[in-house]
Length: 303
Figure 1 (spheres, rainbow, N blue to C red):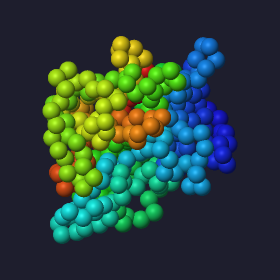
Figure 2: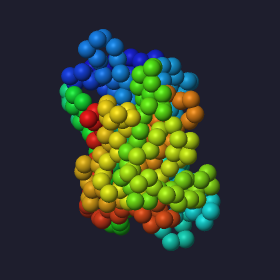
Figure 3: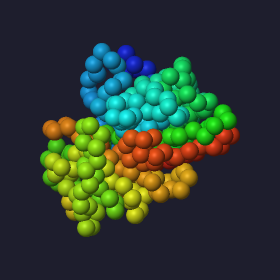
Figure 4: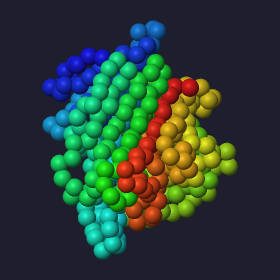
């Protein structure tokens, strides 16, 4: 692991076998890029990161793996956007995808295989609880694991429904197109997410397979997964990227995947969430009891 300077941003680099991981532990605990150094000297990006940055630096970038905490997606309270109710009669702000992606973190530990970082709490405007939130990365030769851990330091239960927002480099070769890739998600229910927060139920594929170039795949929510994983691969099933829930309470019981991209973009997002969006109002959050902890661990691997 080494420190490097990237466009006036100090970041860290890990080289593990053929894989290189770039991350900024202190800024959003953000994994920025993962690429493979191929035998022929070429590089294959697994996680997309743009070549140039705006004046906001590495924040608010369409790239990397942003951390979605305490709630993935957008919250609505009595029809009002970006609001939620932490207690009866209360209504407070909650940014889309939460606030961790824009927060500062302190490094608890760091070594050649990864790091652990703790969210620095500046105020409790959005999330009025006593808690500790940590993000743990473990880097391997052809995979990585990310653990989101919430510890309840107070006397009342804490709701959460976190997630990850990985920007996969798709297509990952210049001679490929979205139409060459398929998505495999074994989900019993599929919804189309509408801008105003409504969910329109759809008929899931009979074999759980979807073409990545299908326009109506954008902003889909896959729920009630029969297996806690999703896969992106070429149409022939080769060069697979697998996203799996591998740790936490009741693994896979509420795992949700959300698909999203922008037209003509060099990335496709297949996002593992703990539950569907608007989880406080939909009562799909998980509760962490006083003095207890909960974990949501995702593995991304090249299969």
